[in-house]
Length: 196
Image 1 (tube, one colour):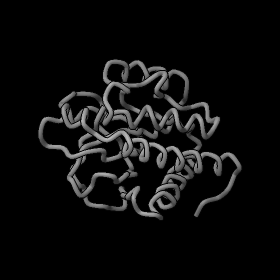
Image 2: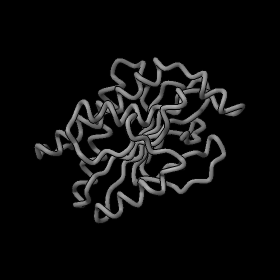
Image 3: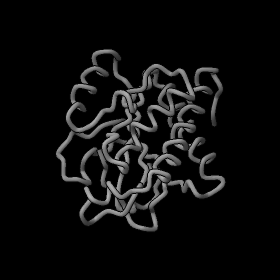
């Protein structure tokens, strides 16, 4: 369910990491841990919402991340996997299930996005919601207290075709990096490790 993101400047509210940088994965994990620690200090339950569909290579980042996170970690509050994806037609139902099951949940939304050529392969961690479906002109509600997006391909022209021609290798690497960062942060929080 692609989010639109065109090379936004890095600010305090957003950090970008290249999965091709040898330290990018560790920096991504540290940023995710900081966000999750901030969420737990407020006492809100953390819910991971991975958005996308397995019917499009470029848009499979969310479900791949959700499935990978489940295989790395037994954290139960993950919505959106390859077996049970969350996408445009069932996003409202997933949000209803989340708000019915959790009191004031802190939602970490994960989605793919399109951007500039030089940004492909970057993962962004930002405060605030993302707009799923914006890259393909779908009008869906903003989702999440924190968003993690992966720039999977170039945007701006024939987005549906671009999504179909996105390299699976890149999407899998990005999903692995995001899932690893989330699993690392969740495990440290469960152990009660303070992260500064």
